[in-house]
Amino acid sequence: MITNAILILLLPLLAFTIQIFIGKRLPRKGDWVSTGAMFLAFFLAVPILIQALSSYDPNFKITQSWEWINFGAVNVTFGIHIDNLTAIMLIVVTLISSLIHLYSIGYMHDDPRYNRYFAYLSIFSFSMLGLILVDGFFGIYIFWELVGLSSYLLIGFWFEKNSAANAAKKAFITNRIGDVAMFAGILIIFTTLGVFNFEEVFRGIADGQLSGGLLTAAGILIFMGAVGKSAQFPLHVWLPDAMEGPTPVSALIHAATMVAAGVYMVGRTFVIYTADALLVIAYIGTITAFMAATIALVQKDIKRVLAYSTVSQLGFMMVGLGTGGYTAGLFHLTTHAFFKALLFLGSGSVIHAVHSQEMDDMGGLRKKMPITFWTFLIGTLAISGVPPLSGFWSKDAILASALEFGMLHPTHMVIFVVTLIAAGMTAFYMLRAVYLTFAGEPRDKEKFDHAHESPLVMTIPLCLLAVFAIGTIWWGWLEHLLIKPELASYASRASQIVVTGGGHADVTHTAHNIAMFSSIAIAGLGILLSTLVYHWKKISAEAWGRRLKPIYTLLWNKYYF
Image 1 (cartoon, rainbow, N blue to C red):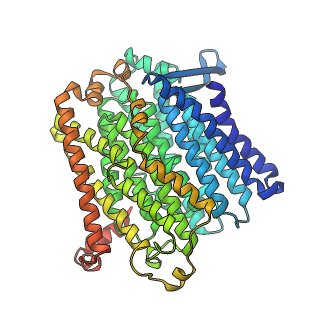
Image 2: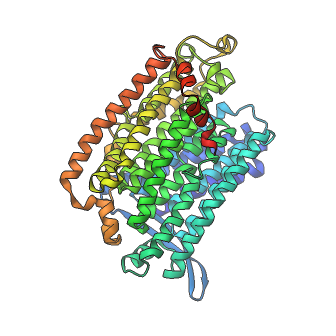
Image 3: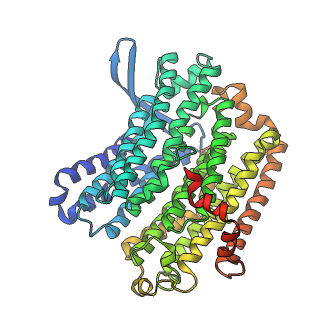
């Protein structure tokens, strides 16, 4: 398995090297090199997941390390760490990246820097795979920065446009703020414990070598890195502007790679967070989920609707992790990767057809683009939390975690209430996007007349992602692998109460039942209201916009951030 992991890591790096140096001289400018490398990486990742599934052991783990730097007392190793979380994330990243590579062949085929685009995709994939596989805070920080650098190249790919160049710089600088804080947190751990390796750090914390306020400070500082990468409040401002990159890049950044990195890192280092640090994570996630959902309500650009939905969904994941729902937060990370990639590639298919991102230029496209419509609808229902699609199970788990936490700590019940409202708004604004894009009469006749379904190289990835967005059959298997019973052996007693709910089985059962009912009800309400406003036209959106003009203006200006 270690050999597979090393090959998975090196394949996209090799593709990047080939594309940069000789890509222009290869047939089809070498698109098959990068695409083939990613598909091969996916096939190499499958045996790792199969081994994890066959062992069906939440403590499944394979590690290997090599000495890298040795300065007497300072010994830094480079290691590969494979566990259940690694196995799942390898499949998620390699599969979605492979499909986005395939989709890009159709979407980007006329671009003059075609080979350079695939080179950037490859180095981006390499960076994320390194982040998943590496063992230790030193290695994770190196790949963390590589993810930031490669995202800068992709967001600013069309740098001739000032908006794209500015968006790339904004993303790069904003992320550096979080990264400096993260570096400070890692330094606290290293100066106290003298090690970077995850297992040794966790053991040192369990032994009490790092505890109390210093451990809380280290955890919050490391979380600040995730605030930047995963676009959490107040460092969320870069992500919507990242839409200036090509649409397949948006799908890659928003689904399986860059924004997932922050949530993944919180999950990977979960045992370092004290109860106070977890509470900070929960409230940051709550604010982010609500704020981004409200902004998405008024967006007219289809990619910006999806961008703010990504910010909001990342907030949901942080709520899950912060309220002790380790499994729930990472489960939603996994399901979200597939349906969000589907939604972004679906929007790319629409943009490819009408040459506009504005939903005011669309309407009636269901007739012209049936495959895009049905797959986009599946992604919409999944993100809205409609059973039995994948998003329902993961979002329900997060709401259950937030409710259970609120029942045990009533002063924090606001986390559940606000998150539930954000879930209802998600269903509303996503159905709004479907109706404005695909339903009704065309609002721009010329664009409608020229619209057509995308080629197979673009629709095949849509269909495959739609299957995973449904995902009812196999998500239960993966959810089991994300249970971490050994948390209690590392975490402090205060942290255990947050993680396990303090052992109140009756509270857990009640919370899950109430959360499931609430989740279905709020999704249904959001869908019904959106249908009344944008499909049946029983409620005038314009009239309500005039009545609530101060609120509309606030949301349109993104709370003036």
